[in-house]
Length: 365
Ligand SMILES: [Zn+2]
Image 1 (cartoon, protein in one colour):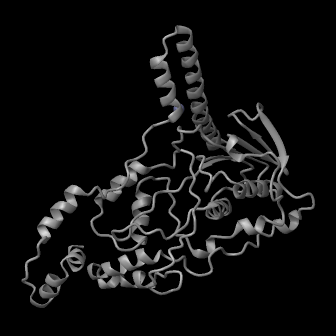
Image 2 (cartoon, rainbow, N blue to C red; image 1 turned 90 degrees about the vertical axis):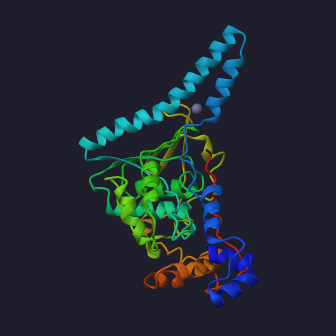
């Protein structure tokens, strides 16, 4: 990296140095290293702490409230908010215990891990959208969940781009309507209180700090697997990611009248029906609708002939690719194949057209 730095900022000296290897740079390697290590915070974001805007607001209001009645009203409201947040986790724990002894019940939760950098720069090689989420979910249902499971509980965060969207609703509705499950419950936590069991960020951070050299994505697999005994690391192949969004179109209504998905915390799928509730108890504040078109052909739906989403390798942003190629000097020759095989949109090293598909990452936290 120092070489890349002097090539750009001290080009004349760099050319001299290439010829004689003795020319001194204005910014020598040791100084560069010192600045790099001490002035740049290039480690990865702090793990998310327990911060909730609603809780903060309550705390501030309670602090300044002078009227004792007002104070106790605020205290009650805040307690209610915390109780709701807790209900999600109490249910998750209780149902997880039940799943251990009842083979017709299973509980899953899922979330995306952070991107892991290869080799030094973070490259976004995969999207994390609704199609990816339901593709992984379908893969998991087909290959991991015991066929005896008829009641499935799903706990995820509120991320609209990934977990809380119509493609997920359609997938869960389809899994029940086609007979794979009798009932599916999908539960979302209170805003600001979403810490799911699959969230092993701390353990992964620890593994990351141990890494000095790492050149291929495959090298992360064992490290990620090591962060939890219950982790199953699956190498994602392009053929595993399917275009469910298009596949579902002939079967499902385009829109559901007066239905704002973000308002709801509990979703229950039974036969062709979907019941949604704005709280953690499905029996209150609920409404029921059918997402299928009236003439939807469930026999055809059950065939699951879903087109592959990416026919070619997912392109890497051209600028990132160029950065990566510049780093090749620092990567052992044996690993070059992976970097050379990466492609941009046009398969070339074009500078233009930065068009990473919007991952619509609109988490509400
Ligand atoms: Zn809160």
